[in-house]
Image (cartoon, one colour):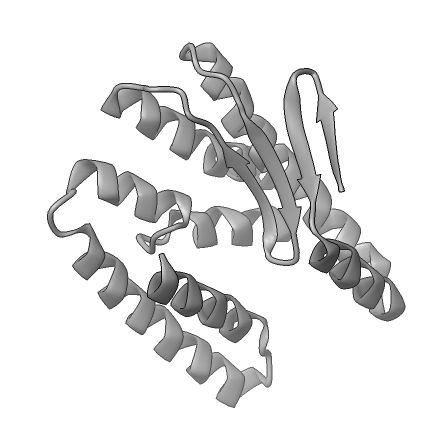
Amino acid sequence: MSIRLFGVTVKVDFLFYTVICISLLNSGQLLSKLLICSICHEAGHILMLYCVGGKADLIKLSGYGIALKYSSKLSRVRECLVLLSGPAVNLALYIFFNSEISLLLFILNLLPVYPLDGGRVISILFPNIYRYISLFSLIVFTVISICIIIRYKAFSLLFICIYLIIYSCFY
């Protein structure tokens, strides 16, 4: 499904609806907090994008999260500001509202793994070696995720690793 909102295309994938339905069967409260923090994160990107003279083309809601696409040509500094503004919003939400989900989104998005915000900043600052930094960081993150599974039986980080590995292989 696709709609236009304030001149921006908003696309919702079928997998997004599936994840919401599955989450509601389990516990809708956690999903609600995650969606609010994710929306605020993307709003931070969008606000900064417009502040530096850019324009959003697409906001995509899918099973793995919310993503902002834009084709505006920005300087390296402005691009980094746009990328870091989403995690900055998550940090502010954690500081002012003690939102643990927002803290997790802040940490996750600053990982130097492409396509996360931190990985995209690394690709701008170090265009020749960012793939190596991203791959090394992804390996470390995967090992940490496996240790968390062994210790706490928590699989969510592993799902994020699998998504990032698949994304890295095909893009």
